[in-house]
Image 1 (cartoon, rainbow, N blue to C red):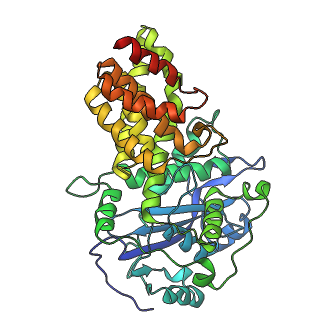
Image 2: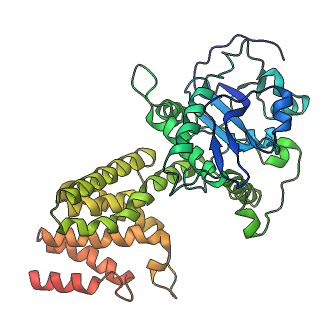
Image 3: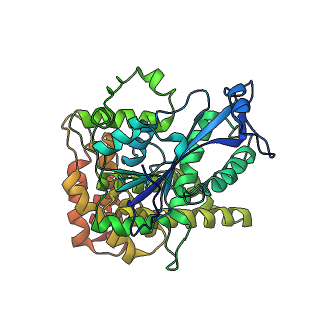
Length: 413
């Protein structure tokens, strides 16, 4: 592997691989994580004598778009480097915060301290060429400054509700990476790293590695019992499950990742919606501010979701329902009609159960109710009747009060 000068022309051309100990975080005897402002020494003797207390950071970064992916682990239990690369290049779904970074590069830059024949052989098997960085700066190591900032914020943010434990570190780093990749403008066009990546993926969809058994030559571990699986880091849980699904023929796709990213934006604000409904009835300044803040977060989340996946039925349905309640009828109708059109193609029927009990049907049912209500409010009875009939046919036990909609339609005539 020779030293090479490089210039990347597009995303997923050159990736930079880095492994480094955290120089601020350490694990106390009670299992909680503490932060030390002064940098730890990183000589070999200090690392080995404190290996049970320290963390390793595995980072891969796309040179062109600046998107990155990262995992933390105990220094005493390092990650398998080939498995880490496989997780990084696969669509990362099945977690509360899916990641946009995915796809194999043409070249992987590997520092001298982690290069190995085994790694180079695995890369050669999938057509990825190994490069040696011409300098430490060129390796991308400045990204560790960003991780140092993350570690400081993680250690001091809301310690009572979110104590700094290894479990919370796993979720927090996924959230940090997502925001780093999707919200920070980096080029003269004010695009985020994700928007640069997405522009390229529209022309050249990402290439994913083969099953880990073919990629590394190692046997895919069996899925452990649930209680053991959920003790693993969340990124490894999701990867193991997705690899077993792939092995059984359920291939992961880039559109599937976009759908997961969209739904991950919708769920948190949708779950807040009922909590903020009572605020409509109160008039204190504090309530007004809280409600205004929620409405802003809700709209922003729905816009982000539909940027990921314009056909996300969950976002279309709930955004349409929200805008109807806000009196923005034209936009509400457009979103609700789109949700219903998509829902008709995806509805899952089971004659033994109400469709509501199949979770993926709920946005469709909600959109039918909201559009019927909107059209009745506008006295567009003929149009409303079409959607009321469609809802009544599905709403076997009147869970969505479709009978009330029918009575309203009759009384309005």
